[in-house]
Length: 112
Length: 111
Image (tube, rainbow over the protein chains, first blue to last red):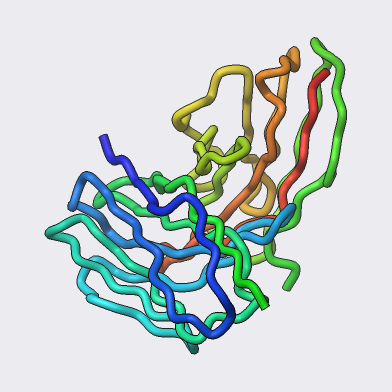
């Protein structure tokens, strides 16, 4: 059974710092991995989608990497800003499955 | 495009009452999902649908029912509401590239 874990559960950094959020999964037979952002009281916004054949995806200050063999993905945020404060969730879609499994998220706070 | 819309935004139910959470999408996506999110937890899949007329259970289907008569709509029905169903409910769709799109959520409290 696929399990997705995100460490740390919460993170506080000063503005301008580069940071890495971690996501691990137990079954490497995945179709893709998606990173989401969730603001308090809001829905999920897709940030990056990495297909299983890809190693990384970039969007602006965000870079997500995928290492299927080790069951890990990282989300790198460069030059963090207070507006980046939110909860970041990763989710994996298993090969041949219809269901996406979510991690519990990392709550990020960027101090001005 | 409105994307994925959900109504209502908030609702308080008494134990034993029933209600339907509405979800609609205008992206012509075949796949639709209902999740619940409890505080500090990831999302748990309740039901999903791969197209009109086809639905299947997710991880936590007990106490819920769904129907999918059209591509656009995927309502979630709660029968005999219980305090354990207090949660935030999200509807989502998936496109052909397997990317998911979420609605804004419905915050439900059962007292």
